[in-house]
Length: 581
Image (cartoon, rainbow, N blue to C red; front, side, top):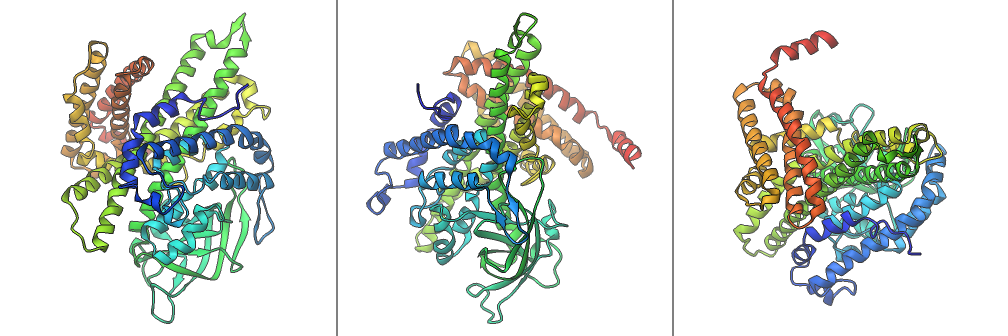
């Protein structure tokens, strides 16, 4: 009997990694592979790099299918505790972290120089996908590599050595310390104070942090990235800076939240009392530059978390439906059930295809961006093509990242809901994992930016034409007879998108633009997924079937959303106000 493994038992993960051409990403990351001369674990060729990537996935898949899954229910039931000053982390959570540390899976995307493995974002995403299928709460701890990536992107060399290295080696965990009792989605309202050093050396000497932070995921982590108001007298985002520190005795964990789900991950209320911390990057750019970069990485992580939950819900529902006999046959033979199961599976594949594509796009701008910085630091000329590449893929990522979080988090909630429905009363019981998936999924479309904020984030880029190159290139593609009828439908979707954008612009009414934004974003997102599915369908018959169902369903949604946009329902806006006041 083979050892259970969430990588080898998920052909769709393997397919998407193969589809994304990992060799090209390896060449981009490693450049001339000279790191192999300095670091024993650095690959000497693209082939060796890809082998390393897939081995990491296999190791993670085995861990997730084995001990992580075995511990998940007990962790959910017991949670963590707080003594009023610190968190008492569940021993099983500690064991999960230790297992990942031993497997060297906690510094995947970080540089060799600071103890990382220098792997592409898509490998990190694939592993977090599997982690979340086993125990979504664990993703909130092992997936917080974005903290280290932020320090690596914007901190000094000394800060990288001090804070990135222990995170990469698994010797520390981290936390993003952003929100406050009165500053959740609106981070401009942050009041938490950072007092400058008396020496006036703002960059090198310690600042002092004072105040309360709330809803901090893994606030008991060792390395903290803290958003604080550094400019006295300011009230907006321009007065905020980013700081990094170790958690010490000056920081008290006053309480952990009693949450609906994600019980293995402590969500903390933290009190800072003259804590010493260091400025990351430049003053006044904490929100407008560094938090935005941090949040984009975190949103990809939450999309991975939601994807894993949605996949787990589908799998459990499918297995139950196969074995549950009613009226003389298994319930998966009834159209009302197998349609739900089919839609659940297709949405998982749609979310995975979109998310993995997004992770690749992030690498395609972040890696050249670092190369530009290196060339500038050495006083060398920067090829214009590098600037163009960064500009194009960064704009593309600004749309795909919120799409990935929006789609996957809504999918996870719907799959968990449908999973309970398929399992009936059994799904409502704690004897099964489905009710845990339902509880865990609910936070995913709230934290790191609600679904409504993802629409707000994606809309400007879509309206500005950041997706047009992809849409136009698709319209110029030729498909064989088996797929041409589907491609024709997608071309019509694109025409509708362009017409809808022009119509919205023609209204010259920002309130109306906001009112129809969700429908506009859904059209663009569903059409892009259709394009991705058709690309997959060229060489995979099963994906052709997936594309067929997705595109036929999208056709109805595009028509409905377009009709809503073109109806100019200004009077309906007034009716909303009349109904809810």
